Length: 396
Ligand SMILES: Cc1cc2nc3c(=O)[nH]c(=O)nc-3n(C[C@H](O)[C@H](O)[C@H](O)COP(=O)(O)OP(=O)(O)OC[C@H]3O[C@@H](n4cnc5c(N)ncnc54)[C@H](O)[C@@H]3O)c2cc1C
Image 1 (spheres, protein in one colour):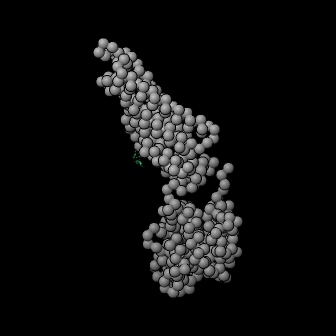
Image 2: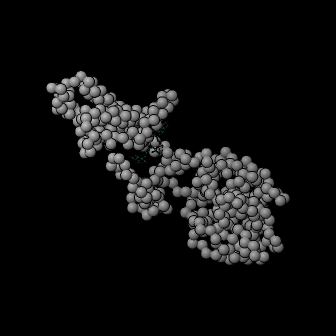
Image 3: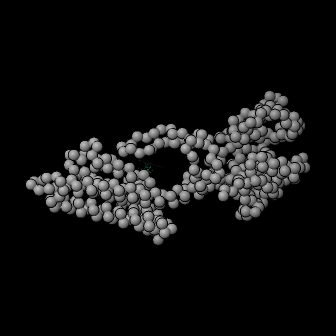
């Protein structure tokens, strides 16, 4: 069963202008409307050594109206967001990051995360009615039109790199002041956690709107190979096989199965090549006898049979151990490496026995010669199998 995403509203501070409890209810409602199971908490001292019952959430909705947000707590929250948690910095973003006319070093973690800095309440009285103009195309502003707001307002400075302004107001003197913005922190993950540690796994059905075959790839032996593009595909939660951070492990476990099946495919090619080689050796007259009667041919056939049987035993071992429920990372890598590299040698030897006829288009050995090549590359090239085997040996 897939767990619903949840959110935590955190309020903090002592500003009586905004009633913290009212704010927390409003933000809780926002979270619920966004489809998140949303609960509330008060106080920022919850992100260091986060205990699930006080800080665990997929998304944080933050409201700080003054009060202290300790640097260590900021750092822990920033790390959680960089690790993939969502953050909506409402109101609090405007309070943080100010000391005199410069950045308060104590607030640097949140400044670096949010990409803004509070400057002032702006000229004149800082409460009033103003028109909010939606300017940014973003899921947050989807379906929202310009609107009138009576409230207090702030002025702040945005980091000028990747902060996208979503809404702004027009000040009496004509200046355009951003009031809502968004910043993507990594892809929901910082550089050190990108790649394998943030991968999820989904089943995307063929025919899902947004799934396109961008390009079919023509290769030396027929293979249904294409470059796929996933553009805004909606996938039901029930089709999530592994949540973010667990997809890579699932892929690797799946490869243990696929590598064994690639080994089995290579074994089939090799067996056919051996049969073709034997048949040709038995029937091709050579210097008053058959090709099979030459000892060099027999050595070749013996080597081919040895390679085929060794690959078969390694493949059966990997499959059998997997069926017994064992992890077969090493065994599957050995089977794939031996079977695919071995099949290439066996097929090459068979083609050699066929001589010039062997390279003619349409001959079985010619087709096998092309068919086998990709198996030494996909599901992990042979060099990768060598690395896996060595790693497993050294781990033991
Ligand atoms: C017919 C075919 C079907 C495929 N099907 C699929 C599919 O269904 N799904 C899918 O996701 N992908 C598929 N692939 C892609 C396939 O998995 C990759 O081609 C393969 O993993 C190699 O990656 P690459 O092509 O980027 O080569 P590169 O990563 O550029 O590697 C090139 C070569 O470098 C060498 N090499 C790699 N790593 C090392 C190392 N650590 N040390 C020394 N040498 C190394 C190997 O000889 C390797 O062949 C398919 C490919 C082919 C040809």
